[in-house]
Image 1: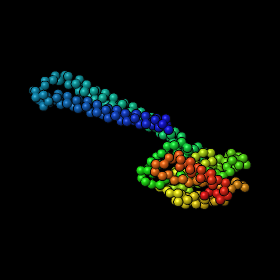
Image 2: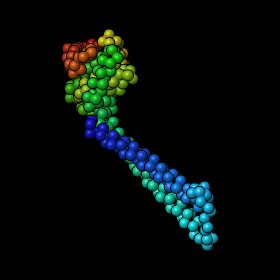
Image 3: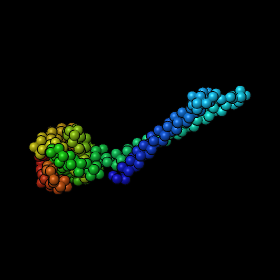
Image 4: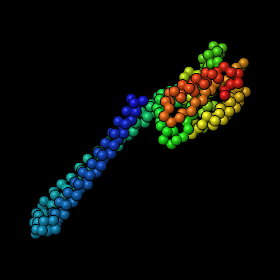
Length: 265
């Protein structure tokens, strides 16, 4: 993720540099305006500016002087307008580049099949969630979910049906768990749910909700002679523990349950 995150950061720096250029442009414009105004006042009222007598100016040169003054103002405005237009164009291009970069970064964290987070996102969030639990003294529980007999499903009905089942599982996992929980496709037919502020006892209630949702899917599913079942494993993180060890414990408990006819538990 370091490579995908570097470009947006670089673009943001360029945007900040543009803001500085914009400020400098207006500062120059204001400074020149003040100098021109001071010169005009000095010409009309020299006694105010220089404590001298009134200047004697040949009337024949007044039109040329005014023309030069107006031309200078026009040229200054043309320059400022062109620079402002260039800055706006550059800013739009940078924001488009930033949007493309952030969209690409987000897509890199999403599983293209199920459209939920992938293993790469787990690498980002795992340490953050553990640190948050340590800092707040809150609980954090991991749930590993595996589809039973998924290989035989692919063998019997083909990979297209298998992919459709994975998509459906991803959908009802998102529907079952809370918004604060993070659902991740952990492997081929394996999913992981990170549940902050949740103990193992509370996570058991989430498994009950998952079981009810699974039963409803089995009643409604269009695949003949097929009944989906899931195996689950829970493990809670404690302060100072190694998060990878906790994940391994949840995975091991899932395999202890795998193959039971009771489905998810």
